[in-house]
Image (tube, rainbow, N blue to C red):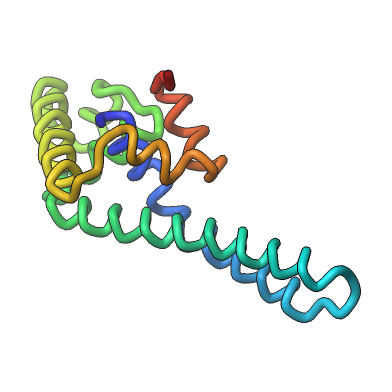
Length: 146
């Protein structure tokens, strides 16, 4: 679950813009008067499905963010974006061991909350595997799919 928690926070700041881009695509398709209507409907439905997934992911991110104190959130986001614990420690004026401890505590809190919502790695993979930006982050972090 660590990879998924980190992936959620790695893309968290981009989710609103990703939804806006999908809305723009949907708006563009909705005014098209040329082409097969059924194909246009199928495309709009597919884009709306992606939008729903992104909005759900944003809601999950919002909930997880509220669980964490400011330092924990900042540490998880920075680490999810590739910073080492040493680099983060310098940025937030804490020792490396404090950063590591806060990171582990944050991941544990988020994991427990996701599990309480019946999310596990399989469910997260199933729901978000078709979102290239999200799944790319998960794979980049070392998550292995079966």
